Length: 247
Image (cartoon, rainbow, N blue to C red; front, side, top):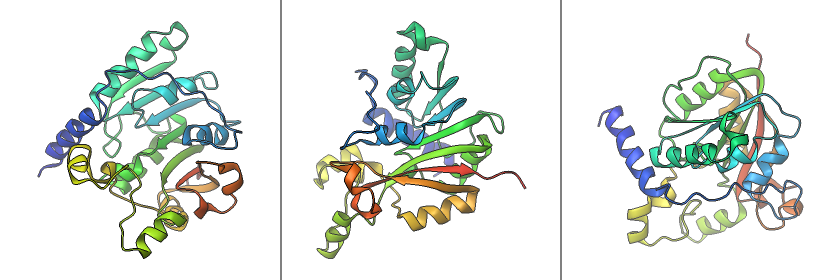
């Protein structure tokens, strides 16, 4: 299968997964809540950051819009054309967002349509686990991030205690699907189209290899504020990494 054919098939799959017919409201961010979701964690990690933002895998642009008050300009990309159409409708419907948000159809693991060092912040929230070419993706994310800029990632944590127990029971952990039902997975993608799994150690090695240095680790879920002191108590890894200066 050629790379172009693969990308076309992936776009069709995500157009089915994210039809874009309903436009959910932008999330209310609660970074200091006892129980948090990944968007809350992103908001907490972004405190003090300014400038221009690229959100990779923006879906319908809810998080992009929720962060608009903090940043100069925000760009979102997604492989799903239906999701991007919905994100554009979101921006056009609000005069305060119309000139501040931009959305484009683009693949996260292909060359990005942006110049080098274009963004102060790059967001990849629940994206890396879906990509076929993770090294090529991170090389591109590094290229468009300014030296000293930050990368925020959220990925499945394979070392999560629940997943370890599943493995000990002989069951494959699921991080992106609510069920193992074969009919459901045929329609929605095996484990929600998750192709890769990570631990804190493996992700640290990967990020250092491509030129980012992890700074802060966190995680979401019920009572996350009291659980995240030990990273294997959280189901997803959310972190801030800093792009190292050019050598």
